[in-house]
Image 1 (cartoon, one colour):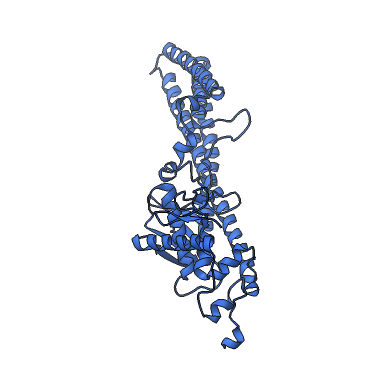
Image 2: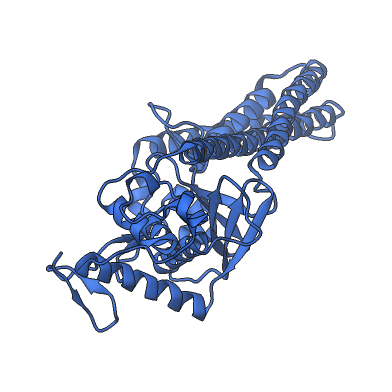
Length: 391
């Protein structure tokens, strides 16, 4: 491959673009340059561990999606409960108002005048809500509701990194596609119209008071169903957190599934998709999940893969996370520091990989029979160590 080295140390192709290096390339190259070379030549990884690792990653992503769906259900039901409970409070206030009207505290004529104003106001609000449904007012004022509702750290990089799930809306498609502002205005219009009509046409205040009280009780029961649904969803979230093994590791904002966004560093050519990205405090933290046997200390190749993801998040967000997380199974989690030494290490490794892509010369860099025996490309390696002779 034709390429040349730039002043910053990275290698570029004939068009002056940085030679692409993936985070997986980093992991394979650090494990063994020969294994990396075979992968570049199209030799696929083989073995039971590889198959099981793919299945575990897919299972983990599915659980994370289900967890976030439960979170959406929790938010949805809690919002609806708050709206419905406000209806209960409104009905209770109306019941008290009718009671006092009946006792002569409020003049009957004044009540009818208030009712007329409420109906007129409700009509104005209803027309406003309908207009907002058809007019592209968000575009006019440059307001993206999903961007406003997204967490702050995600909002700052919305063009590059999207959360796993978007904020909940009442409807996602069809004629009734609308967000919270329209919903609140329509809800207020309906509530005002009901109050106005009641004040104007409820001649028998005792019957109206009793009817409102019954409706308030029924609506309380309906609101409680939404609260119970929210609590069930919250229990499901806790259960999924325990199954995933991410409890206490932040709020998940990204998961490497089908269609997941590819993160890229335009300056170095590095790119990749972390298994997960969580938010801890104000920091976005990459998480790499490894299956198989759990080592006492993180493997060097795994550590460098996490460093690659830390470099990507730094490049995409403009903010350096303090560390990354390396998980072995659901119990063992290692913190990988992101400091000046680590940044130089990953830079040197990327440059070494780019140089090897251009100049060639990748070969086995170790004499460890056990490492060679565990390599997923051992069968196709021309430079593999003979295990029997080594013993």
